[in-house]
Image 1: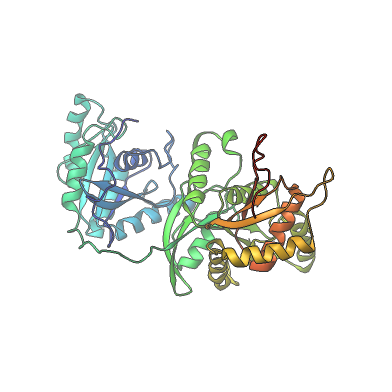
Image 2: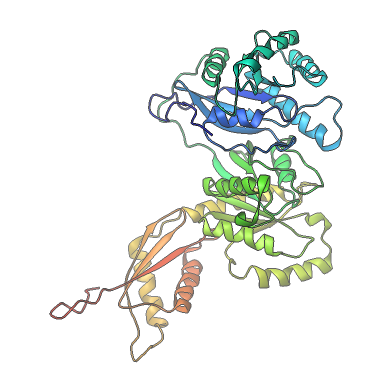
Amino acid sequence: MSELPVADLDSSVESLGPVPVVAVVGRPNVGKSTLVNRIIGRRQAVVEDVPGVTRDRVPYDAQWNGRRFTVVDTGGWEPDAKDRAAAIAAQAEIAVQTADVVVFVVDVTVGATDVDEAAVRMLRRSHKPVILVANKADNQNLELEAVSLWSLGLGEPHTISALHGRGSGDLLDDILNALPSPPPIIEDGPRGPRRVALVGRPNVGKSSLLNRVSKEERAVVDSVAGTTVDPVDSLVEMDGEVWQFVDTAGLRKRVNQASGTEYYASLRTAGAVEAAEIAVVLLDAGEVISEQDQRVLTQVVEAGRALVIAFNKWDLVDEDRRFYLDKEIDRELKRIPWAVRVNISAKTGRAVDKLAPAIRRALASWEQRVPTGALNQWLTALTQATPHPVRGGRAPRILFATQAGVAPPRFVLFTTGPLDAGYQRFIERKLREEFGFEGSPIELSVKPRKKLGPGGRGKAHG
């Protein structure tokens, strides 16, 4: 896709304060997600040449000529929709109600349909400014076809090709003109909400949990696995604090084994984990901890994010299942005994109030710093009590330790030689016992003293 001439993120761009919202709506497969990608200048919204790929309302940060705004991609709107399609249409209607400006997309190659006309009636009831977009006008002949769209009563159609970029700059200018006046710039604003990624395999209840904590229908919920495709960002107030939750697609396969929509959804989920500070990994308490669950947990740990494991659907767990689940946890989660665990039910609301304290505890560990003096005093006592095993007549010594960083905590051990992997694990376990770090991975690296050549000084001063 060719580059959209979006202004660079720099000091000239209006920052902080409330950001206006632009909702992109229309019937299925008119190119809404392609237009969203064109507006934000990158391929982030999932696009595939079949209707129904986008299901939730998905916000993205955008900017044009120094103005920031949020563009919301929506699923295809249809009147009289049933089942999941009705939930998708409802999400689109909520996006319209919460937007400052609505961009209504019509396929110029098809013309105005009965569904388009029904959508116009819905948009008129919203009393929001509407910009009519005639998409897929890839050449001049197709631009002439847009004249018929005056019949919709929304004014002049904006002819564009979201795929090729024709007319996108003029459209963005008109969107900015329709937005409310920019807010005053606030200097040195407070820290934004903490970013929490909701991850897990399909159908473990991620969207149900998001709806529960937000106390409204933020995401489409369906018993069919794989309803969520794009990461869905939501600002949620929980336990007196605002959090930015990201509901992600369920991970079924490894990224390199997925294809089409699932491939891009996997990339979005990986990106959501990378962009988050903490991941809440949902597991179905009523089912065996699977290889898919393990893969999700590994992704979070390798990304170095704080971790809370939420065993969902606890209302369906009986005594027999609890017995076997305890055994599974000991066996399957033994490599991450430090993860914070909560037992919840997104459906009934059971113990969901424990989620915010668990997240805070994990984040505090993720950002914890141990003073160098206290770290070395503790380490000296530990290695004297339990020295490294002797290998080849010698035992390497730890000369000094320092914490190199936080988020996640990173420690460096300066030694006289390489340490056994088992001894490194022993130090990490004792480090957790002494200083906590519940809910956070720890990175422990070893820097052996360099051996000098002939004539060099062979000993380091600890």
